[in-house]
Image (cartoon, rainbow, N blue to C red; front, side, top):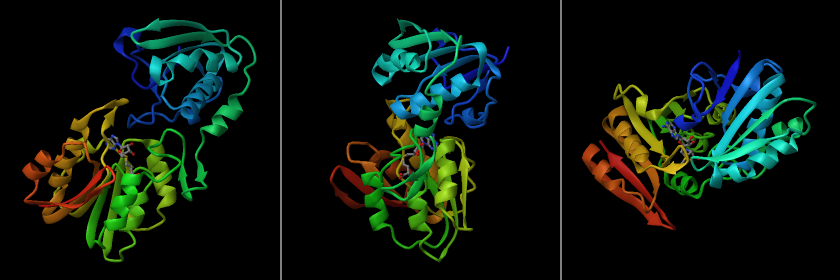
Length: 299
Ligand SMILES: C[S@@+](CC[C@H](N)C(=O)[O-])C[C@H]1O[C@@H](n2cnc3c(N)ncnc32)[C@H](O)[C@@H]1O
């Protein structure tokens, strides 16, 4: 039996042990878009919160199912779960749903022709966003706009020299700003989201740049960088988790050479000062206002 899994459903849903993981947020996963149509017996989908992203994921999963194949989809009630049944019915399925562990769980079998899959897949696909001129797609951080914190950091970054990393690079907004300096010799962008990394590769057309999908917390630390830039994440699995941004701060310090510097923006309410002061020799607030703080931290 061929089983496809998307994301990490809580254990109470009994996620299959032997399945092809297809979440773009889990390095090493297969791309859901590339699963052969009509090849899967069961798709277990921990559905993402954004409506366009979720409908595209459901449509891709349904397209991958064989006739008679089953979908078992769940989402937190306040993160799309309340709409899941209607969305699946909209594709022509007869859906059984139940509340479970703060989620809505919907199960259905493909018994006849499905409708609306192409439209949902198109609405969730990668494209150039007119407002930013950048490749992106629903589900990626701030996919159809420039994040205001990122814009503030971009406006104050100095011209760097040497080797730079952009941690949690998203679609490459800060990477492009860094590469405007001809004295930058190499730029490495790292993001957990495969879709963001694919977009960054299209958005940053510079031979000095390279991008990789990885968890920043697991990166090796040769300590050879001159600069790090970042607008670190503070959500993990949809929940606020300040430890994630704090781990980014410590990792940035380990990746820098002595004398190197971190430039980062953070929401003003987030407590990064203690970690910055622990990991760096000298920390200065470059700018504060409109809900953001920008730090320069020298190692
Ligand atoms: C606040 S966004 C900033 C994105 C981009 N730098 C920008 O300014 O638009 C944080 C980014 O970190 C990524 N991210 C989240 N957790 C991560 C992790 N553990 N390792 C690497 N990247 C992660 C997210 O996918 C997201 O793109």
